[in-house]
Image (cartoon, rainbow, N blue to C red):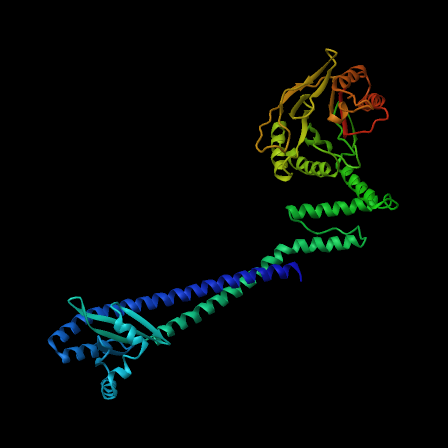
Length: 494
């Protein structure tokens, strides 16, 4: 059974139950109101009539009593009979003279007092109602000086009330059926629209699963399903490239390598050419996939954004969060030339998309090539290291620092800026660089990073400078296993 059919049946069952309950309650409510209204009307009639009958009994005026009883029946076509019995159950008067004569001829007690309904009514001192099939027998005591003198009975037909209830039931059932048909149509259309992208994804997954990696899933929604389709399409593309490399590998290693290839696609292969700027970056994950991320993008005329991010944790979990950050960054970076605003948006969107307890540190810079100004914002990341050619000194820029990304929403970030002059060198790194450990568990340290930069600051280009720094790290680490992702970016103004 398809999801569409299950979903449709589930909604229809719910609607049928809901409509049935509402219909039943409506019918029950109307029936209760009609019966209650009838009870009140009969009670008022009997109360008013009992006073007249009492006067007739006291004055022994049989004509007054019989006339009063007959008038009750004549005024309401739903009243079948009206009669009066004494406190011993003997029939005194009846609205139907034939019945009156017949009963008098056969014996009162045999016809009336032995009836359970009659006995109950004769003994009662209250207004009483007893229903048998489609008739209601009402009784009301006629009292004088707090002494029961007789009991007045009205035999009332419920046929018309039941007819009204049946008509209402028919109308409600018809309306309910129409509503059900409307909801069936709405449900069918709604489920068709809702499940169409899922069908396309399922079809695409099946086609890709058969080995047709040239197939593209045609889902264009700009939502989670659209992102999933994009991921499927990207995955099929990378699988096509990586399949030959993974053919002799174990299944686990093959899956990790595919993920690694996907992540490498997110790391920029080509860096934009920036006037009078040389830039080089090294990325080395600790495992097949990592949680470090950097990028360089042109965000406007003569304006370039440079970002470096370190996701907490390692492996596939960190890699997934890194991919999320990539998508958010590429979406938001061209929208603002303010580093603090970019970090604000990146933090909020990341907070909404990652599990509680996960976070990332990051540093974002915008270089204005026309004004030669470097603007930056730090979100809990390692400080920007600057070699100033004019003074020959190394500086750690700790301004514009704030909380890491993804911890809390609406965090305010600040920005700072400095003049990026000829011969100056900027070094950005993740903690895998300065926390690289040797076999004795000693860390390379940030001080060694700065001293290495100072020693090799005269290198002609960042490529060579990064190579020299990594050589120093490798010599220090020796045979020790790499325990964390390593990302190193150097930028030189020429």
